[in-house]
Image (cartoon, rainbow, N blue to C red; front, side):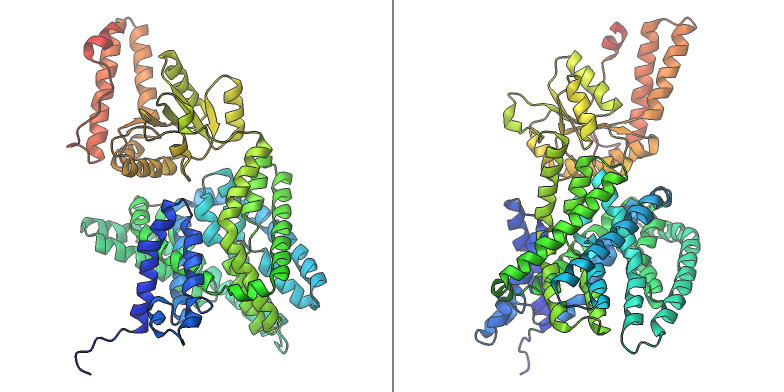
Length: 593
């Protein structure tokens, strides 16, 4: 009928997804429930085993359920691609090269030992032949890149260990898929020939991407930046990540390999921060779609019917993987707390597990019923990963003997929060004590915290970049937050996060150099102190005093030069019009000093 509004299935599905992202997830956040669990539970509710099963009897439910779950798969895959792209932006080729021993040492051992142990476990638990047990064991050995890294980050010891293992898993997935094809009945060797062809073609494509990217990307983003158009900058970013992903996919490699390379290449340019910020909303929404698809695969009725079998399978897989990963990390020199937390966090199966199970089923290595059972086990594992992260963090504190961060209500007065317990953080704490100012020091390294507490500092264990650690320390009432860690990217992100949440907070940050200081000012720092500048001023002060210049004028000139540099850095950071919070001494006070 002309003029009648037709609601297409695509619009109906889009309404459900955007409703989950814009309405339901903030409700979960209000009750401090991670959005990861929120998206998965949304998938359970709107999927074919939830409200979708009632559509034949209640037709209007079609508008609040996912009518075609398979149609979401490309969007879910795109979420994984954007996640690996974001990981590449956080890395650099130098840092990746430094991690090579972890990636191809720890990562390889974790997959081989976990896969073999799990193959033995499922082979004894079910009447499976050798090939099927091996395929299932290695499928379950994978851990979730999409869920683990957003929880752990890549800068903490746990994050670095998890990243090294996950990177190897992303690399090894290609030969595993081809080996499954070679082991399939009537394969006649095509799988092995395909593997060799993919490896040489993939190596050639990766080499071309590396060479072309280093030449073309700086020019591409420079042109986009000159237009001052966010839309063009976004288009250039999507062009790079999708183009690189397609290039690797066309030769049989995983698209995420291309996405990771694209991120690494852009990380080497001066535009990586802007690219990361502009891509963040797309990554978050696409990952939300992936998590919804995970939830839609969970059949609660089937789980309740076979509760004992599912519980035994989930507990068995989690226990095997946690023990193997934790023991390997300890043997490679990791702290007990890091090994324990990483082992528990990496214990769940992964979205890659679902890919390997599908490949094994297509190759007739696994029967459909067995694959469906372990797909449900994988979905359950993905759902409880955030809970495992909490348990792992608590276990790490207990193993290391470090107490949880002190709640803000435990103190009678506001405290300055010092992020970082190293040399610079301790010096700031010394000055706070000298002037009788209350403070608390926070760091992710329990060894530093234990030594600091032994030496009389008010220090606590925690990750300022994750969760509510700073809230527990009373950041709402803190006079200032001082960032002392030597991690430029993390410092910049934390400044931006704090400035967005607490617009009036005094944020003083350590900068590696003047360029980093300007970036910190752009992110919202009240003051950024470059190490190179301070060392130059101290050298000047020492030489002037030693050659006979009076102390008072020297100190006054040093402070004047410091203010001059600060104003220049603020101008470089685009903050020349911003009202400045000044904490420096007046000229009279400087002379008196």
